[in-house]
Image (cartoon, rainbow, N blue to C red; front, side, top):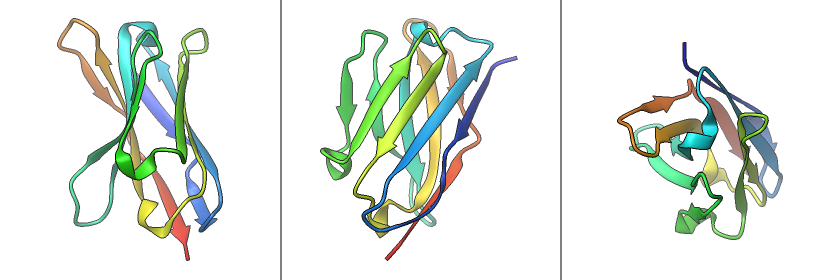
Length: 117
């Protein structure tokens, strides 16, 4: 059974930091492009950051310079370090794993991030 389990969300004041983690079981993350997405109330889910198997990263413009995605294939985990958080970063954050060459696509259950002003 494949599972992606997010953790690390919570309530933080504007300007603060949080570190999200995504732990995978049932799949080797080394074969997956991993991404963090978020969805705010009334809005569509959007890509925040992604990292390929080789470590190439890309970020949405609205988090560049503030968020950092990383992966530890040995521990089968992916992290999202979020600094200088803003109230508009408030959303449910989801971990996603997409296989590099097969049609496998997995989502975690999400973790709530709330940034107060």
